[in-house]
Image (cartoon, rainbow over all chains, first blue to last red; front, side, top):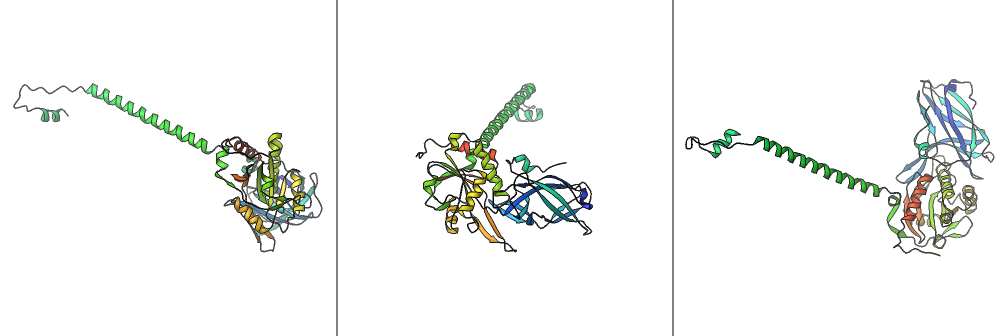
Length: 146
Length: 243
């Protein structure tokens, strides 16, 4: 994973991966955990990828027996905190892949942040495309701790 | 107490010889402590029995099958959807097999592939005899974007034997209603379609009765446990349909 030289260099990225999707799919999902070891607050405002037309943050919500996908406009990452994008919860929605991506491929993702002074910074990461294996209860209910 | 007893039981002036009866305090204390012991042990016994009964009830309430099983299975009435092989998905096609079915759409990047991945695990872990008698069905409630042909490719990616199906909005609505399920198709502020759908997985028995409802989130291990328990407890008094 390569991060560009900026204030957000201090953020750690863990468990980043893209779910391999069936052929001709127009949307894919990416998951990762962001950890902020500093005491500064960062807000993840948007994302982009040269491999997709658009990247959005979404959340799958179970409400009243219904599954809903809701857009997440921004995510605040407090100091010493972490946020997880994981299956069945918050995820990165990758729209219209420019080519078929298969397990073993890598994609590039740029995360855009602002801090409390509205200073903008960005971070570029590389994520492997993987074929999903089964989910376990632990994996879903316990965010990655470091 | 002594004075009280004296006033009640004697009249000192009339009977100078009166001697108050001796009170055996030791015996009283002994008797009282014995009764306290008996009462306490009774209370404890009752509490223990109560706790045991409550625990037993809790236990039966949460067995994997009774939790998901419908009190009264609902016989499905005529419906017609189109399966990904372009053949109809109807009552005939569900007869004689157990069916695990859920609603979704292919433009769903997170929860639908997650659930389908769990189901591939379930299929992998079932004994061949049970697997041969089980159907996995993914019903797309987004027919404008999901044609049976695109469902073939989508569902086949997870498991070649899984069935994809869809139909007209009316057919889907009526079918979902039979399974106490619903969906809605909306458009967001950017004009993008938004699809909401019931998250439960439905189990249909070989007599084509809506038999059990497995609540989300879905994990392979739990689906497997619940499904096998439901099959095992499938009442022998219930006439089973065989082909």
